[in-house]
Image 1 (cartoon, rainbow, N blue to C red):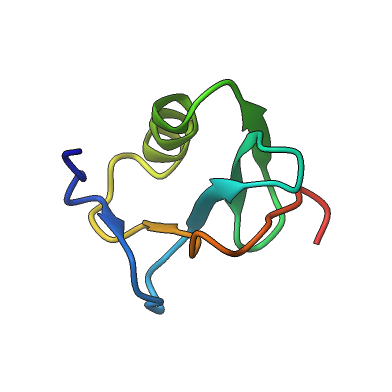
Image 2 (image 1 turned 180 degrees about the vertical axis):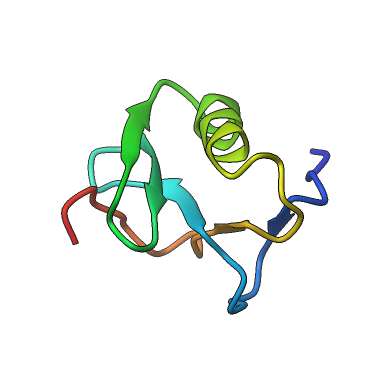
Length: 74
């Protein structure tokens, strides 16, 4: 699977979005400041939303660890 240069696996101070699964297996893209986010049908849709929201800025998106469960509300 190809990973965009806009996405990183490690924490960084420039991240704006985190993308990962919630407890029910839905894909979540969430602004790390809590300003915006959504639930998506698949990983690519969540990433596309995050990329669009951060104007395709490099390093602005990070993937949550596989064992993490995201929520739009925390």
